[in-house]
Image (tube, rainbow, N blue to C red):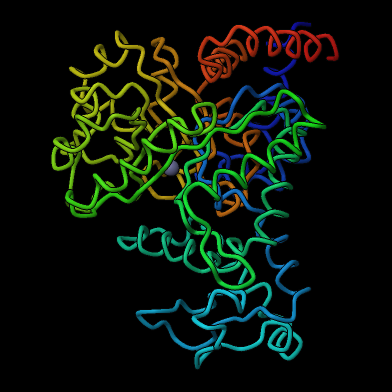
Length: 424
Ligand SMILES: [Zn+2]
């Protein structure tokens, strides 16, 4: 039997099992059962290519974040109702507070969990997205999660441990490298000092180099990111930092993006003047929406952008799809993110299966895997295979797309793939 027959049989078994409807309607909840399947084992072993769409902090293992926090006497949790400044169940290292002074409403984390052990699970849940969160306020709720643990995972000693673990685990999962979106100047040291733009990149490079001693092929690149919805006049400053970093670290910092809810009231047209002369490659979240009035993909094309985060709502603009195809624009599709943020309630309706079959340049990605409690890449690939009636050859094409024609990476991937097939 060849790989298509083997995987096809395993897929039929998964889809015939009790509770298989969850695979389509709530993939996250279907995962514990799926992880016991032969198909999951096969996908776990599969060579993965590069992960092209992930937000650095949202890949940090939350259980590990909490265990680091609980082993440190200087961490705190905010247990009062939400204020404009702090989130309910936000966690922080002491160094994050102005002058190291703990404001009212914050309890020492070790003491709080000793008194109320259930608090640990409550924090974990408050930092994890699920289908139940979906309503008209999903984006504020989703963004609150990032706030909730930013003051722990950006504490430099924690960041180093968390980031090292992520890279090693990705390599073990068969991921060949990653392009991380990141917000600069977020890391702070023991004295509460923020790392500069350059120091952030230097730190990331240093950790990558250490990881490459064990996984020499594994390479990280960074996409300097800012927020959607900000006033256009604040963007040139950020672009200048991005240009500086791209020039200083051409192998590491590869572009500029603006992240956040596309329904923020400011589309790419609003930013067109500043982005047109960016002087740096723009790699943009666009079309992360199912609103037909959202035409960010077309606006991105007009700006010459050839790599789009999501590109989900392309199906609502049939006149744009041939242009995307002709220009070879890469769509960084994130199936499980789209379900957990409420865009695609039934994964079978996700349009990217069609994009792949019609030969668009699709890559598959996980976006915010720690917050979604999913794997770095295995689970999104599996969701695509189970829900979109694809062949393994279709998935392999998406994985090859992530290598962007790099001859060395492609030949390495093909040799990995040959060993994978031979091992079946
Ligand atoms: Zn994203």
